[in-house]
Image (cartoon, rainbow, N blue to C red; front, side, top):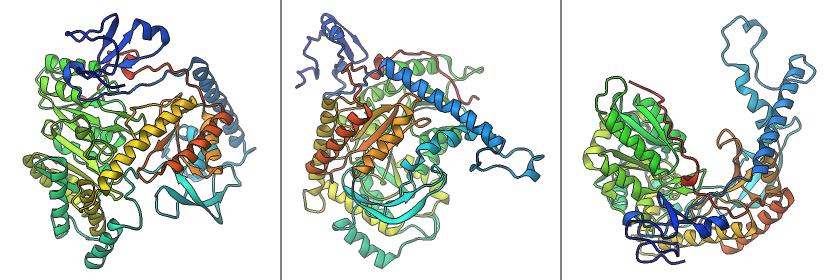
Length: 558
């Protein structure tokens, strides 16, 4: 459906004041009387002209019966867990988990035994779905080393066999650059001969190579910012740089679904942390208003800084940040914005420049642009881009810059070659073709899964595709059944997701051909029927239509 002149992807007329005739609009979503009767939600993307393209993102409600059965399933597993712990205590059942020695019983406990209850009694039942050893390039297909367990997943033994040609639906190889042939591999091999593998020093000592300088200039040009700095680890790019930017007396406003690296960085900073509902601009604006009006707790002094932390693509929900609205709020309340583009850089936008490019926004409106090289570029490490003053400050104050070993030269060359390919500086159109292929694969795969009757979360343009499983027994069953059919998938459960929202997470790649996707879809359809996973009733409920809890909390205070 094409949007009209106002940018609206809904067919109902929109008034000049942003209201919808015969319907109700709430923070960018409209529920008309006819649509409400049919249980459908349509999204309005005009939002005062902030959006230049349709923004279709919705989340289907969990069916009540499925939610109840999921809770019952966890309840049964918990009861059996207590029973098995009782049997282990009296040595009726062999105890495999780590316990303190008898002579250490009078010592202060290293850990609470109950802390491992979930791992011991629930996770172990389906542990075979994770940490599968791969013995090939993580391309469209992979080879997996076969293993068996004779003690209910407490230990594994390799059979010596290899499962070849497994369709890879789990790697973050969005643009297909993780391969052992082609220009990237050849360039990395040349640099390996000249520079070797390791640098054995930090950037501030004698580990600053000309390749590092070349990479940072290229990253700044790619992002459209004044300067950039590269780091050896994506996780540490967040966790070690946020404490350098904010401290005690500052306020961090963090999306509730932010990655663990952002959460850790915020906690290490010593700043006050307040969490807003995922992608909910009402919740964010309320926190901003309260921060301006009330200031710091007890003293009521103004905050030194207010920093908003968001991600481009949320890797568990498949949703895309509502960046135009976040920037509008950031400008309105004079806050700073930190954007984590780990999953969106390379994977979104007509030129692959991430969520800023996707919405057609100005990079200068984002104060701190962070991303990683571990996904779309098929390498490792991360970067931060922004004003030259910001990068100069981080070079001397960031723990990642001062203490961490420099990026390996072949890895740097892999990033440079891949980025030049995306920008078209290699003289080919391969990068542009990969971006277009990923976008086509994403829309096709999502559309087919919805047609089959699965509940799919996230934005229609997000290459991260969560398929809802819900029940704990179906987490392990789905992963095993898909591997039997030579399709490798990632399954995720509590505590990585809410307890009733276990899911399988597919990651699309430009390396996937239509034949590969059709084969995977055929097997997913078959397993979906076998495990009765087709829960969809096509009642799409956006996150912003979920009950809004105005309560906020602080993790740390002054």
